[in-house]
Amino acid sequence: MQRFFVKTGRRARSISLDVAPLALCAFLGGCSVTVDTLGLVGNDPTLYRGTSTGYMDMTGTIKMTSQDGTNRCTGNFQYVDSETGFGSLTCSDGRSARIHFTGLSMTKGYGSGMTSDGEQVSFVYGMEDDEAALYLRTAQSAGQGNGATGSGFFVTAEGDIITNAHVVHGCKSAITLRTADGDVATANITALNTDLDLAALRSSTHSAAIPRWAATGSYHPGDPLFIYRFPGGGQSASGLSSTSEPAGDGGGVATGKLTAVDGAGNDPHYLQMSTPIQQADIGSPVVDAAGDVVGIVADPLGRKLGGAASTGATSADSAAQNANTAIREDVARRFLATHGIDIGSSDAPAKAAPSAADMGAVLRNYVVQLSCTTVG
Image 1 (cartoon, rainbow, N blue to C red):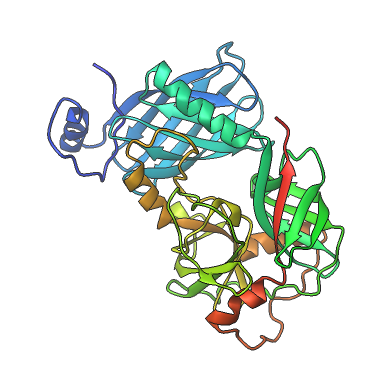
Image 2: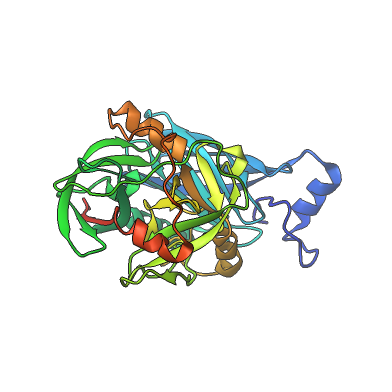
């Protein structure tokens, strides 16, 4: 009989041998269930093997070792809900990684992440080798394609830009940026922190507009949030279609609300929001009703791996769409300050708040599209 991963909080449709371990653990309390785990780490072509162990409190541990036994990765994870979660890995070769995962059923799922040196990690649990290979290949190709696209925004008039690290890490050529007016320029990486998933760029052009940053603690759950959306952004990052209000220039403004001032598991680096996002929105500023930056769009929890089999994806994607995340403004400001980029004080006098209809006209002045050719 195959070993199964315990996923508490998900309602069982029927009692069978497949869910017997879960029922038994619920009856006994405090026990654990283990499932085989397969993975790929960075550019190592060999398959890592190990196990994941889940506990009744929705936490667990993961461990996997390279085929030649030279690299061993161990870590912890936690469920956000019945189908998605996050965690971290530390490997004996000195690298670490943040990971997120999605459950396909009571018995299996997949996940991915990025190592501290910017390489892709992917793993599956509860799958036979043939099925696992599909998910692992898809995850690796998603992180090692021939091109990267995202967004960023000017933070100084001199041309400094901030975005997510994974949007630009691995670029083998100058990064191309495009403004909402269609102007094209280039940018180069000046600072990168893969643990925070933040990068600073210096553009070949200056910006006449930069944003005001919200003061830490000035935003609260329920506050309306806005992001600028370039036209042709495609599907949402969770695979669902999303809507936006026209901005009058072919772009649009996606709206939502702040749902939590910290991330899953009380992670102080993130905000949670209901604002729908597309893959191309990652790196964009998230602003409040006053137009002040409260965060930077990040990958949503439980993001479906592009091209993977869609078994169970509807409910998993719905969970992800309701738990989109942004890197908090205070984390971003500290990152910029650490690298000598002065964005001024967030306590400067507030400007007149734009209306929701005018928000796009404000954001389009300093938000840019980013693209490059990547290694791989």
